[in-house]
Length: 631
Image 1 (cartoon, rainbow, N blue to C red):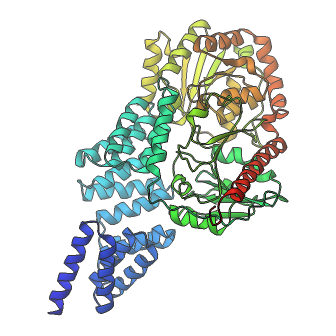
Image 2: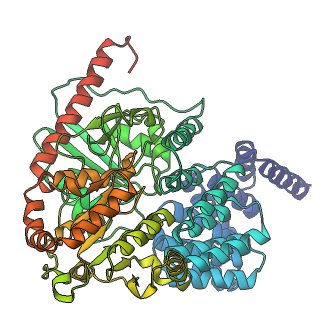
Image 3: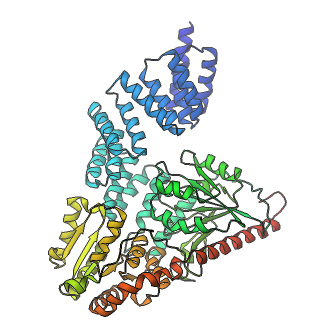
């Protein structure tokens, strides 16, 4: 009779789980485990349920109980490893996955989950072997094909990733993850319009926030999409991201406008990444007598840059394994006054935590060239060149705060390549170049560069980026130039990933750098300028297309800013003909840049800390004017 009761209870729990009734199932299983502590199936099912509810400590405990009772069942080990993985106990999780595979070496789920763990650690080859083995074991396992696609994308093998996604979608056409990963693979190949179409298909299946983020990020690359349209899609996200029952935290921070402030920055890019390079001056030089600085690092693959930056601040927290509610709780526990988002709609962002009002003052800065769309994001830091006053305000949910000396502070590497003499003076051939991400090099850009090459007979163009390693992408670029009447002998496509100093030394082959549009370069432009290579930019209508304006304005090269493609071509062609000026810039540009506001950390820190103090003072005034009990 007891076995009948147990079987009935387990069947009832499984029905509840199938219906998505997780909490009632968990309560029933908890009671069953209490009444029948030797029932390993109940413990295992409770572990799986707790994991689905995000209670990974409970899932770990229950899995261990089940393993003691039934050590030879592979599914229990998988549940335990899953819980350990989500708790950030990576080594233990890997060990348990491998124990599971000792029980059954071709278990597709164990192989797939181990592959996912390895992928998070950027152990791409090992992860790929796991996913391939999972597919061989279970050819209809769409999730393994999708994860293989993720690994291939992270290895810059985008065409192969595209094929893996299409294989997953052939198995399951309504697979949002596979659609999203297909869209990313297309975007990284420069097929942005097609990528947006696929993102829309993925969103139609459920509108997951991470897919929404990628879709919005992709919109910034489209030349023929208006600012109103892009802003509208971001504002829709803001409404979608804020449920009616969203948690809103009361703030107990002391509303003293003059006191020492706690400023916290959150990003998954506090690694060797442009975000980290532009943050270094601020983290290194902030005023310690008036500011406590905290970094919340969401990266699951910290590197030497992470270790370097962590020594600069008062408090460094690894928050990569916290969900958004737990993250917001941590922000409150740390009594943060101003929380600064460095991610926007890029990967592993914390925008949902910002909808919870994790801190009294919330700011978007640096990592994303557009509005977050969140009404809970109070400010966005920029400058008057990137966002001219009275022009871009309607496209932002945030109040724009313009730093007088520019919104960026560039810190050159200490071991930069030496600058060679002007290349065209040696070869009598002017060489244009772009080292930007090729996702920014759309057909409009290639058409403009083709016309420039026509205007400057004998000139050459180098396009360098790692995504050009795939022959399919290189062929597409060559065909576009050929259709425009440009001999491909004048085009050099480079993809080799060189050590940083050697990469920058390639600028010693370049006379003039060309900025893409509507999404300008940032780090690439700074590096070109530092290597004595002038940059020609096209001023756009939104921030992403005006970063070049900001950079060139700071270093005193406003005459290299064009207002349309015809002027862009004229400026670049005239500069190519002015060998004397090019030679002068070659020797004078680095010291000129070093002396400019762009490379002045003292100026930058003063500007941004003044902005923070004004934001805080405004909050204090609002707090004082609010009714008692409200923040």
